[in-house]
Length: 243
Image 1: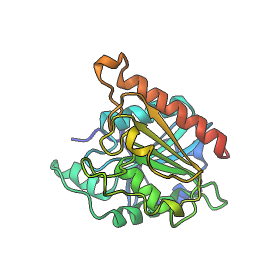
Image 2: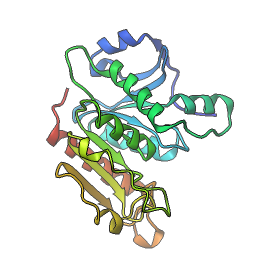
Image 3: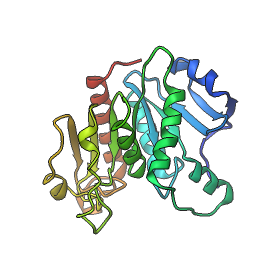
Image 4: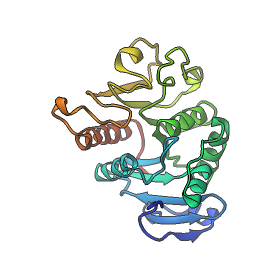
């Protein structure tokens, strides 16, 4: 059973949500036609629409902790769950995600709702697959910026299958926060890629795909998550206009 959102959600029409100021979006919502949205953080460092990875939704320990840490650093997170994950939570059994292009389309629908009429696009990003979907959307539509946590540069054990062909089409500021031991793209591998000038990669020492370091490192996952959140907030403040 999912504990996302953490409190009962209020039903809201997409048009009503679209008209709200960021500070008026705080809380838990069931958006008619799309699903649950959890908004936390005051937005003093900007707003980030954040999507989850393939196997676990927003209720996962990693996603819960990163949203809390980002809120502490002034980032307002707009946390969504893709339709397949919502169904998985309802049925209590695992399901594979659909084709990535369908997730991109779904993410685009959320962006249409969360972009206020006078502008003020949120930043896009997410964990692993969620970040990949955000990057594909950013390659085709105007986006304020990207935050990619544990980007899946390639499937584990298949470094030849790079997921970078669309990156030259991304024109917004892009931050990748990656564990140095991430099997989807280690530091040694990624430093051998040619990335655009607007892409910044911040390495979390000894972190894996969920930013968990080995005990021998002397650090904890909580410390790496807080480091990552601080870097994200600083990057968003530097490259974006706070709404």
